[in-house]
Length: 256
Figure 1: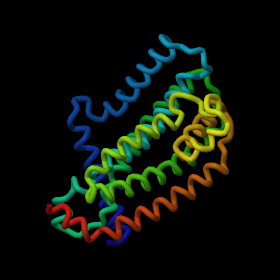
Figure 2: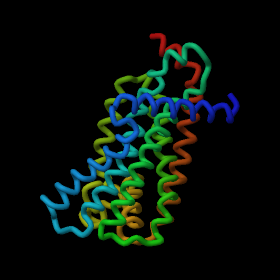
Figure 3: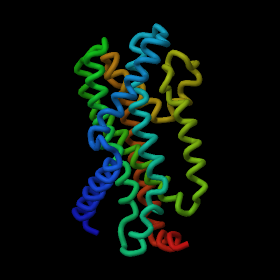
C-alpha cells in the first residue's frame, strides 16, 4: 500500500470512529469539552478546596500529571484489542495491521488536544506563571506521541496471539501510574538513590518536564527528553518490525 493511501485511510477511519463514538451522546461533540471541564472541576473542589494540603499549585500539579498520564494510558489500553476488533476487515482484504493501533492513538490524541486546550485556559486563570517555557509544550507532546504509538503498536501486535496478555498489560499500566509521580513530586518524596529507578519509566520524566514548563516557568531537561525520544524511536522501530513480521498470521488467528 502506498504511503499516501495509508494516511488517507487513516484519516477516514479516525474521523469515522470519532463520529461513531460521539453519536452515542445527546451532547455530541460538546461532550468532549464538558467531560474534561467536569473532571477538572471535581479535582479542584476536592483537592483545591476540601483537601487543600497547602502545597503550592497543587491542583495544577495534579491536573497536568493526570492529563498527560491519561493520554498515555488510554492510547495504549484502548489499542490492545484493536487488531482483533477489525477481524472482519482483515479477513476480507490485505491491509497493514499497524493501521489499527495507530487509528486508536490518533483518536485519543485528537481528544487530548481538546483537553490540553482546556487545561491551558485553566492555568492562565490559575495563579501559575505563564512564560515562554510554554513554547516547549509541542516538543514534549511530540515525543510522548511517538512513545504512545510505539507502546500501543507493540502491545496490539502481541495480544491477538496471547489474549490474556491484555490483563497483564493493564496491571502493568496501573503500576506505572503509581510510579509516575502523578500524585506526588518524585524529586521531593523519593530518596535520591531511588529516583533514577523511577525515571527509567519515561512517563515519569515527561510528567516532571510538563510541570516544569507549564507550572513553574522553567525550561525542560532537554537532555532527558532527547534520550526519551531516541528510546521512543527505537521502540517504535521494534514495534513496527514485530507487527510486520506477524502480519501474515493475523488472518489465521482471527478465524479461530
